[in-house]
Image 1 (cartoon, rainbow, N blue to C red):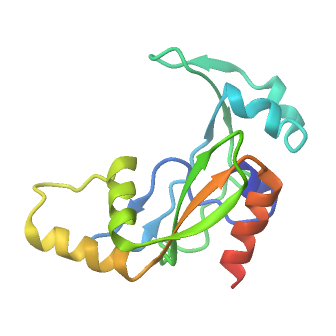
Image 2: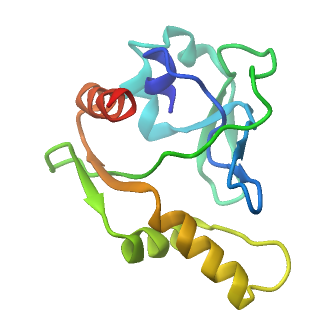
Length: 159
């Protein structure tokens, strides 16, 4: 997300997305990005001030630095439609690729990422979720080249 922000894309949130029931619009949650130690060197050329940010240790021992959003003012719209779901995974020895996913794999990855539903997971909610994800373009992003990944995502968003 930090690389996408540096490339000029609108920042709505980091690891959390609030999706409105029924409309499936995403409500912005523009909190600071939690950058783990492994990303610091990769992002340092883009964000030189990253080295000066305070380091925090999470309960699990992970070291994190928090990069504030580029524009602290509220987003222009209260909610945005979702057109794509992209599931990124860093793979140091792999080629950077953006591969389409089918609805079943996308639903699995969404659940694995921690999709939470308020209340009980009833049949009508599952059917609504399947219908929503089935109508989206979903992708797996395998990356080791950040510039290439940003390029692929920009092409996707402009296409």
